[in-house]
Image 1 (spheres, rainbow, N blue to C red):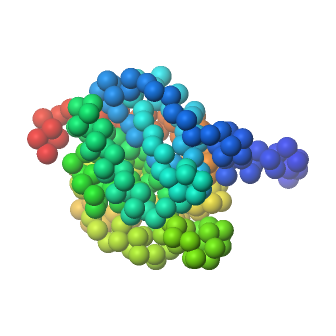
Image 2: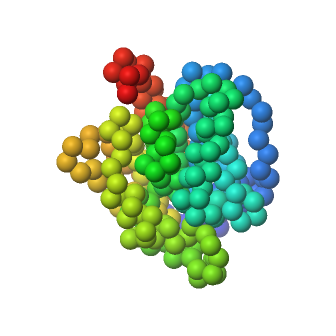
Length: 259
């Protein structure tokens, strides 16, 4: 059995929760780029109690692949930790995208959501007009059925005394039940990438369970990848790039463009 060294433990914690210096203490500045001029635009949505800095590696890789990439400050505790309720954040996303579409002229984009970010993406598509703006949704370690580890978030947020999204992430929460009760648009591919070594969102919480006739949903399992590591792992990036390219090709077909 391999012995876990102190440095190995630090790496393991980072892979599950992210780097304190690189994610939580790096500020929330965004570099202005010309991404809106790219034909294929990707919106990155980070998870609960994290910042958009978690996407640094994924952003660089996707831009190298030729995609335009944008991310938003999702607000919350400290003005950036994405602790606000899922429904409220999804509504803000809808308003922001409409404003940017009017300003920059794009009609649709792809969304990649990590953890809670995937629930925000689904809520936006299913309840806030995102079906008219989105080409595809890819989720990384997203608790589509809630996760028991959200109890730690509930405790951290004052056992429900603060109006946050921690309770939204619990199994059988109102948000989780609504997302899985309502149908997801058939013309928008939805891919769940999950890891069997994810300790924050156990893999069985992330597996999509399409109903008969729901053919646009797909699950992709990876191994030896921690929860936060899903955003920077090279193997995950390859799957993400493949799914984006497939969705982009589908939307260039005459059938999709008329939808």
